[in-house]
Image (tube, rainbow, N blue to C red; front, side, top):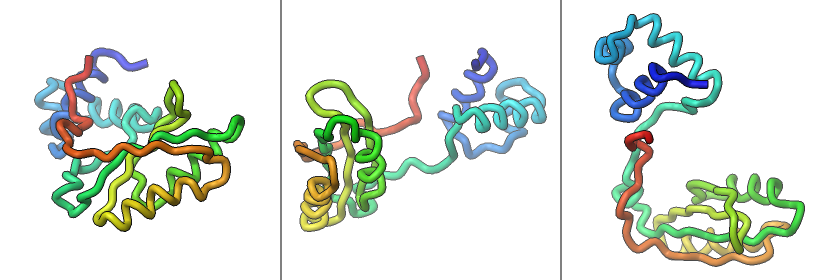
Length: 148
């Protein structure tokens, strides 16, 4: 379980994780070793799964993005999702409820690559049907949010 101090640490990291331990600890009124110890606990328990930069895929040349809904054969969900997650161009894979079993977010630099990525889903064993929605515009895309 995480407590109020852990939540405050996560809030600070979500705002900006580039600060030094000393800077973050100072803002939170913690001793740096306390901060380091708590962050290590959060990493060990996979609450913190890594550190990195949020990038704008469009500015990196990924002009074509889509959301692929995937129907998977009964009993083969995890196996198929694992294979989908390894496909080139797949940004994220989600296990969902509803008519489809899974949703994948894909990104490609060209229309041809986008088309090939979509078609590669159907060549996988246990994938029965897909429905693709092209993303026209990204309104919001960030994991740096105000926790509830």
